[in-house]
Length: 229
Ligand SMILES: [Zn+2]
Image (tube, rainbow, N blue to C red; front, side):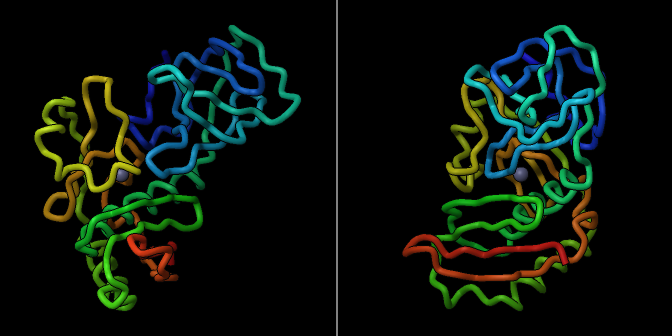
């Protein structure tokens, strides 16, 4: 079981690691700064020593993180090397991820899905199309960005989360249960919800946002897609 350093500090760009195990084309480390695909957020890329990491996924065990290497990498168990994430890409993911928390606060409707890539992000809402006005949503988002509100994480127990269902906007992007505790992301006065992803420290760091598309993806899925302006 690796130490998941990104949970407590999303700004770590590099760290010393030891290769614990090799599973096919993926390696497991004693500690990691690589966020594995989950909660709608894409997995990190980067380098472990001289090996290129093309994706990061959760393993079958709790807190197991599999760093998927490019073909032919040939890693060795016990190697002690330096790991780096692709920080520019991760920072875009953090900005867009935090932007989705703002979007969830602006659009008052149940969230039915979501996805964060490094170039764009979307949430799906159970809402009628006529309530989604592109220019109004974009203006409110940018107002929240300009409010430069600090974000903060806190931990609660699974039992506390069960007693406060309003903290989970959608099961499709909910953090994993069963570890005894769940992380909350709070943007004071704007949003508070269970979330295991990586966020920027202040909404001002997101920078200007564009609503690039609003489209119906089904009766209960009206998709609002954002990009960094
Ligand atoms: Zn989040």
